[in-house]
Length: 254
Image 1 (cartoon, rainbow, N blue to C red):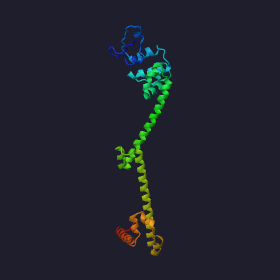
Image 2: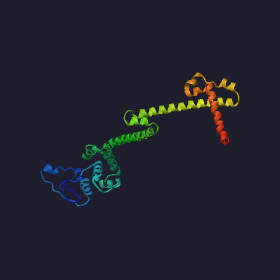
Image 3: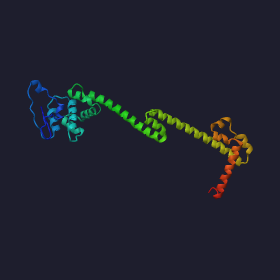
Image 4: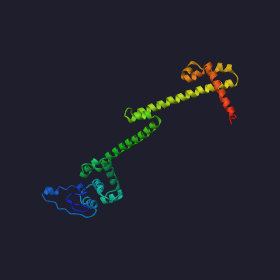
């Protein structure tokens, strides 16, 4: 059995060497001997075991990727591929497996699961994780917008008293109602301006005949409905008279 340490003999198997369990000594009933290696333990273990064992390309790639977890040296895919005597594609597949389906790595090392099959499973999990991350990103963005536009609904979401989707729907409905209210106010104001225009043309009979609102308009808004009374029109006239005085005091409209 290869014993590799960086500084001193500890009697423990180096984690990189543990990737290659040996049962030969136990089966033969022979006490193993150890060799202390003073140097790059990971590089030595991999070169001694990956090259000498009858491993598939997938196993060699996986062993190299797993082994370099314990290395202090930074190695790119090309360097790892050269050390394992495989293509960079195999190393890339092994890296995806160790990142998204790490529990499958031992089976690849044992030869009970091919690297390709493990990679396909890891690739599926990677896709699922990306979708989940995108949803979380959008949820954070939507929640931030909700806090700005409807803090009361955002508080309900934070307290888990309302789902985010329901809060967003309620906010959109609220915004729609507000927009409709503004449109109604704008329409009523336009009608009021037309009436005032008729007054300016000195045609009060025409105003009374053409711009008197119906009952539906009266129910739209109580404030506006009050305008469509004799006293309401007189109140507008008095207000406009004060506005005219104010403009006259400041020298007109310029």
